[in-house]
Image (cartoon, rainbow, N blue to C red):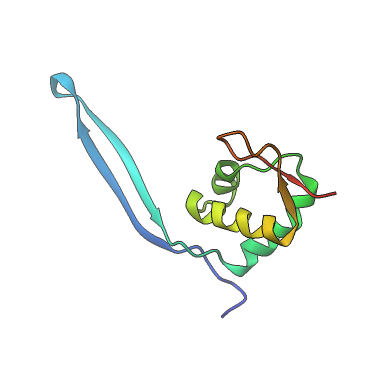
Length: 99
């Protein structure tokens, strides 16, 4: 694989939703590949100890990835011992770095 891997866009589309009284609303849909490039994974791994809390949705927005892919990555990091789950009883999974 090349050193300069780019994020893969699977499909990008704009939909026009019909609303009441002839109004329309445009939304853009972006489907991403379920693959994390090596460069981005290195950047995520290096930034984990510097953060106070880690949420899958925050990571997905910051690195422009799928939330499901980030959740799998965070689960893998938890098994490796890099991060730990703050409170297993919560529905929202909040991770903190292992110190």
